[in-house]
Length: 405
Image (cartoon, rainbow, N blue to C red; front, side, top):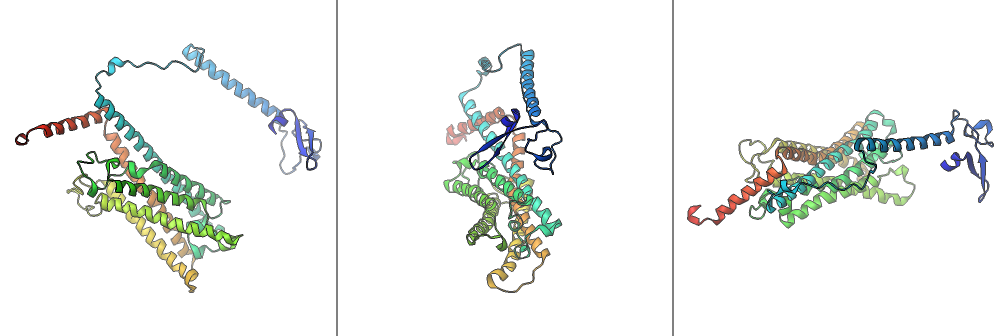
């Protein structure tokens, strides 16, 4: 079409296998159009596609020439690429030892991985909020646009089942994006502390998940993979209302959605609870500010306490949602007559929305704490030298006779 407009011609099909060429007028219409426009409801206002294409090409050429001139004027060189890489002065790096190079490289890799995980889980939280905001606004402010069976369902999936609507498309794209980012981040292995009861100093002296027991690493991988893959299925497969099913087999989509959505949410919140209760002893030591929660990690931080509070909020939201869903399901499953209302369905809807937001908030809070640690840790070489000094001191102690220790 662009080439045709550049040469001031247009095409139309005349019969199944015949293409007819029509010249364009100055205003962009063809001779076959009546009134200079095939669609009278959308006037072209004397638009010329040929002139627009010429102007676009001129802008591209001028931008390229201007960029080249600026490069030449600033550097005095005619070449833009393939310049030799600058050589580093190796005499200034002769003080580095092999242990310093090796340890600093590992620390730099760990910090880069943690920073990536932090950004991913924070963007994932923002995406989840976006996935629910539009549907919440529609359900609260414009009830006429929700499905007719919302009072019987009361779920986020019911409101956003149609991807042709703005809130349906926002829910699908944003939730899938959040799940994908969380899955790629592998935050359960890079951001969280290892579980303290399984932490053996001789086997994991630096308290890193990579040195944790095999069974713990497997649980952490399941923690990050299973819920997020389930959320992907939840976002991509809609839960259709009965009046919108065009085929009886579409009930498979509804069943799949209704299976993955609650199980993914439950697994994620349960594992967050295990991390706080078993791994960090945060529930037991919540009110103890002067005593260590664990022998390995010391007293609780306010970030850990905030995660405990958000985790409890997630459980409260889940209980409200599951309670109302059980009540509404008595009519569908047991055939009992129950009293329904839009307000009750809306409370169930917000229970699911808040539970999902709280579930994605927990790793974002841990990411914020990790970013604070990274800022307070100093430079990479400073941390490497501190660890080497620690190792040298402990090695010297281990080599002394028993009577001198």
